Image 1 (cartoon, rainbow, N blue to C red):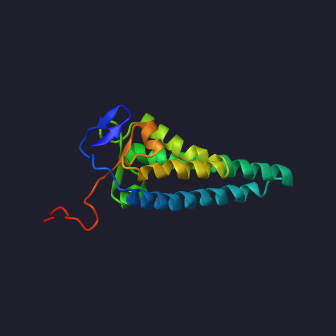
Image 2 (image 1 turned 120 degrees about the horizontal axis):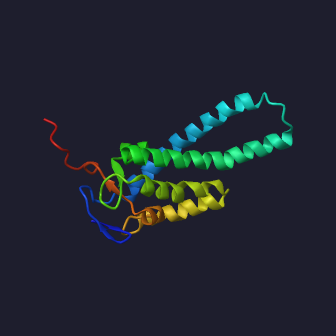
Image 3 (image 1 turned 120 degrees about the vertical axis):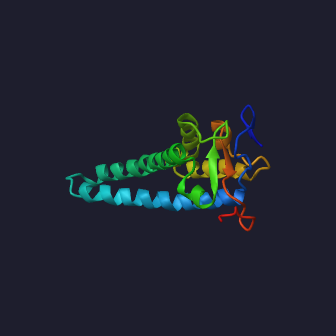
Length: 171
């Protein structure tokens, strides 16, 4: 059982995911999300480069897009996948999922709080990345829940057998 904000979380999947799987999933998601953000910036830059804008205003546009557009896309990436699938692509690849207080897929609200605490600080250069790194390291604690898990009432659990462990008979 994992601990929720008001006590243990009960449900069909309650074995906490180890920190190593969570970190691997986060790395995969970071690569995928960074690729998506890069593609968006290229798509936006092509028509924007044709606009008659001076260098100062163009710099402000790109700085705003980089700071707030990137973190907003990260938020949408995390939130959308959690609401639709209960896991991001990285979590699916590492056989872990996010569950809400009842042990099922997180609600829209739980997913929004989790994504906001995890992703929106990224809009603050350096400080946001440091905050996210430190708060995410809470997942390495004995309870296995980072700040974004605790505040949203979610937990990250295994969805499949441990690597090298007994697999289900597929006969």
